[in-house]
Length: 80
Image: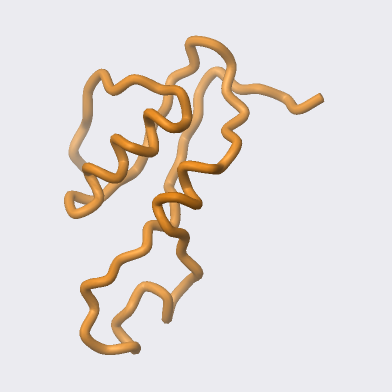
């Protein structure tokens, strides 16, 4: 049985397509995932869990899609 958590902190490896040079691409630093791959992840969350999802401004729409795919509902945000 998989342990489920009340609080989920997630910093998905977002894929960006805006880099002009291979050396500047995110992929040059760490492996990334497509939004579809991130959405397909099985998140071990309890009912009524809280999700803290890291997303940059260019990925806000994708983050909302991920939240929904994981069974969460958007409530609020914080800027760091």
